[in-house]
Length: 248
Image (tube, rainbow, N blue to C red; front, side):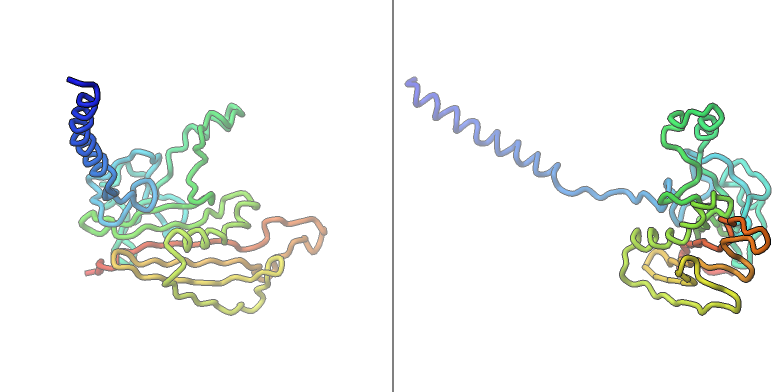
């Protein structure tokens, strides 16, 4: 067979193969439905406590409305040991698995932690809790900036609200600003008492933040004149609720 004929045959044979390859590649290139990663570390509304994993989490305990832990529990499924709050939900306090962070601090080797720095969300130390209904369905998540954080971290705690609003999109929020109570004053010229809400088909969002000084709080001790770096209120509370939940 002449050379040109052989080339022509080879090209004609290659075209269907190339078309098949392109078809397969195009099929794989189609956008795939991504699994919902949840709000943080796989936590998302609707999960069943009995099937939830402890991967990525350390201690669990009964919660105290965003405060410190109470009675220790071993698994999410033991939510029933925690007293129900007025909403009818049982709050389970959860701490991220940060054992390596503790060890790294103990041996003065921050690299040991491999990036694990306690229970933080968007760079802010938080108290995290999951709230279950009586059937063990995860109906709410609660994030409260940790008042035990270092003063410089606590001063920035009100900024967590911005991370929340950016995470869930700036549109659709309804915000209200409360007036200062008697004796409340700004911190560095800034005063914040703001509450924002947003409702989506699958979740209702609420974020509230404060930055202010309460009566009697000052940068300097009025007697000694020494600095008081922690004399202010700065916090954010963020809650995600299942709009389908009814306390019956």
